[in-house]
Length: 107
Image (tube, rainbow, N blue to C red; front, side, top):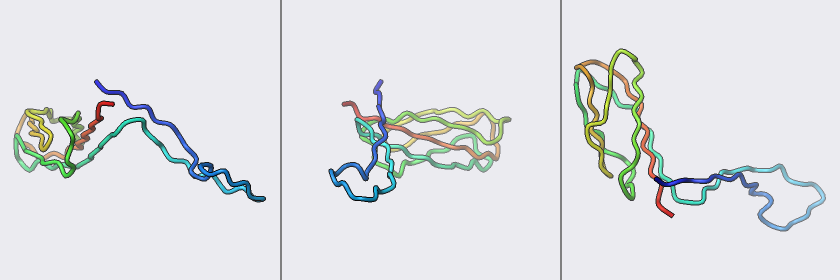
C-alpha cells in the first residue's frame, strides 16, 4: 500500500525577492509522489450491473469506492482494472452512485 504526504507551500515565497510591500500568500498542496484521482456520478436505470470506463489512464489498478445516494440499495464492485470498473447492485433499481478512483504511484 502506497502512502502520500502532502505539504502546504506558498508560491509567492519561492523566489528571494524582498519588496517594500509583501504580496499576499498563495498556498498550494504539493505531494511527494504522483497521485491520480477521478470522480464520477453513475446512474443505474433499472439495472443490476453497469460497467464504467475511466476517463483517466491510470498507471495501475486504482482503489475504487462507491457511495449510493439512496441508502436502500446495496452496491458493490464486481471487477476493477486500470481502464474500467464493473458495479453491481443488490436489485434492479434506479439509483445514483458516486464513484471515486484513486491511484498512488509507488515511490
